[in-house]
Image (cartoon, rainbow, N blue to C red; front, side):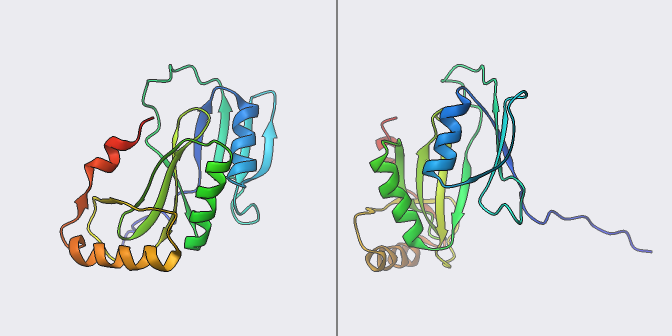
Length: 177
């Protein structure tokens, strides 16, 4: 019989060591809107999910982070949204709550807001545009614009740079974090 090639259905969860568990729970629950599905206070662990009925946890917060702040530990955690309006609404919420926003950009195939959690981990909320663009593709967007203006701009950028990809390094340099 032919051997079965295993495959991953999807990434299920990310575990993150945090400095201050209470502060991190408040951030992931109250600002990002994930639901706490379970906790083990003795072990200093809290489990959160955006779809608790489907996935017990997508993020695990664990106390005991000991690395100094300048040590790079986690490249990023990305959260997919089902509408561009969600991404723009999160951006407004982040501004209102003093969350550190790194940049608002398009990857051509997505429109994203990059931001930081209380431990300076890099997080991303994004919406898939349905457009195809070779990566890396990173161009800044002004989230004060309307959804239709943003999509018009992204379509033009993908038409211009989609086949080869394009990174606007100015955007990366401007993140004064």
